Length: 425
Image 1 (cartoon, rainbow, N blue to C red):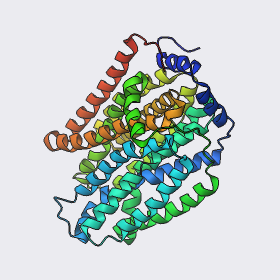
Image 2 (cartoon, helix red, strand yellow; image 1 turned 90 degrees about the vertical axis):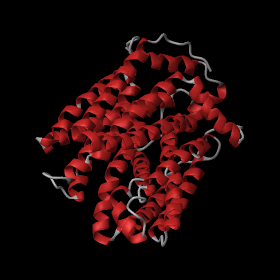
Image 3 (spheres, rainbow, N blue to C red; image 1 turned 30 degrees about the horizontal axis):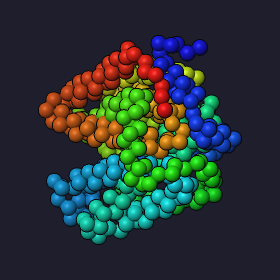
């Protein structure tokens, strides 16, 4: 039985679903008839991880790129900025197209164009060609979010949270392993080989998607492109659940970036003086947490979304204690990383499970609205983390991370006390 004081959001969703139009019910019935196999779930998760990894490859390669292309070290940071800005633009301008166009065709088009963009990066002979190719990579990497929303639409309602949780775990794992993959391949064959190898892998996954991706029988909106973009903003203004969960996304991914952006700084310095390959291995600890949190979707399916959110946010706050113990124990750091990534992923999966149930006909636009806040949080966390580390070292970073985690927990608690609003279409 669902606790009425804990799962008000679920009640809002249920009330809304009772008032769905006949066309929306038809959409749900069509997709419920589809059986989301284990292989297809793994394929979606793998494709998501590979696509999102492309915008994180450059992080450990900046020195090599600067030396090879002839970019000053003071300017090479633009490489990261270009990909992140274009990713944010893609979230708003490309992801909503999933509600307007055939998503199978849209995904395949993005994947094919991504192959050429990655090859362009690998063969860049000037900074202009490099930045242009990376801009396209960042723009097309949002195919990850189209895949997530498509997986949500294809899966049965009773198992939607589980499917979304597993597919989303591929995104987090792709982010965490991108740096390790880039570092190892660069040591073996240079930085260009990272993007060329990624292009080959994208060819392979594209072939599998072409062969296995189901046809898109979703009834499309009769909107112009301009109306589609406008409705994305309107959805955010109308849907309380989306607004709450978007703010939580901003805060938890700010925490995520605070840790992962600055972690290399104390580990690379004395007394640890760890190599980049060894530092990248800490990403494996994060993968363990992300995999464990994939089960959060199952809890959301059972109506325990609010409970899962509260427990995960508390764990997020507590994770900073072992993370702060880095100076005394790398094992404690590893435990803290597992705990933090478990918490972030659990909240993220729960967020998506809840918002995908709001408007079945607008899942791509819901995804776009939600993920824009994810991008803002990630960018803000990266900037704040390195700035604070310069002034207050690792202690300052941990205090910042714990403070943002506390704000997220407090914000979630305050939303529970707000009077419930009557659901309306």
